Structures are given as structure tokens and as C-alpha cells.
Amino acid sequence: MNQTHCDEEARNASLAVLDSVLQSTRRSETLIADFSSGFARGWAWAVQKHFSTALDIALATRVTKGKKIASVMTSGSLFTFSKGDRLYDTPLAYSETWSESLKHITRSLEVVSATSCEIGFEGFVEAQLFEKKDGRLEKTNLFRGSQSQFVRGLILGF
Image (cartoon, rainbow, N blue to C red; front, side):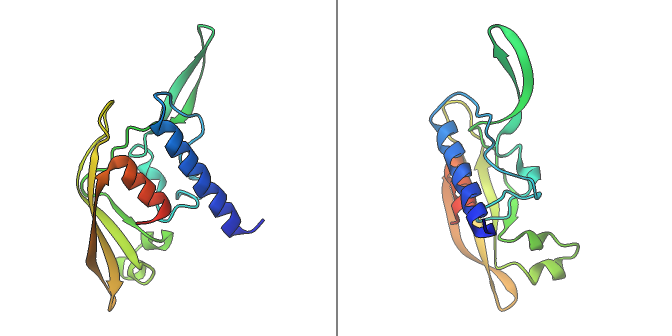
């Protein structure tokens, strides 16, 4: 099995969890992202593991027949990306120096305003997209949409 196929499987699994948590009030025991490499595997954007909280990945206690079973990691739909969050199109963007990072980046995005999801409210994200031109990151498009649309864009691309 090649890496591209594995990444496609990971991306499809992430989309399935996203769709599942958006249609249910129950948290999923299948996580929205595989962070085994430190980044969400198969996603269009290099989303670091430290965005787990923004992706509503959290510990939850499972109860069966009235008895506490265990605490397990789960995914929910209360996404909380916030102003100042910056993401890049490659894990190589997170090098030790900006000059080294810039060699690898072709696109980036920065959340310029956001409201968090709450029960019954999807939340909103406005993010500025940048593309590298002549060695510099220049503003291109502006994304405006719900937190869940933003997460879908991180998985599939904007």
C-alpha cells in the first residue's frame, strides 16, 4: 500500500468522523485526525497536534449499564479555531527558523476572526489565505464560513 493511498484513507476517515459528529450529539470514539506523525495525516493543511482542542478532541468517560468503563479520547463537533491561529500547507513550515520555513511554504492561512461552536450554534471563522509569490507570502482569498466548513477546508483544501 503506497503513502498516497494511506493518506487518502486517512482523509476519508477524517471526513467520515466530521460528518458523523455533525449529525449526532454523541461524541465519536474514532478521532477526526490521526496525529501519529504530529500532524493530521492525509489533510490538505499541515494541522499540528496542538490543534486537538480546537478540533474538539477530548477525554470522555464512557458508561455502560450504569458503570463507569473508562476515559477515552473522543471527537466532537464544538470546534474552536480562534483569531491568530496560523496554518501552513506543509509540515516543513514548522522549521526552526522563518527563513528555512519560507523555503517550503507555498500557502498559509491565518484566522482573523472567529466565534466558537456551542450547542445549537455552529460558530464562524474568517481566515485570510496567503500564497507565495516572488519569495513572499501575499494575501489572496478570504474564507468566511462556519467552524465545521473551516475544518472541512483543512481536510480537503480551500
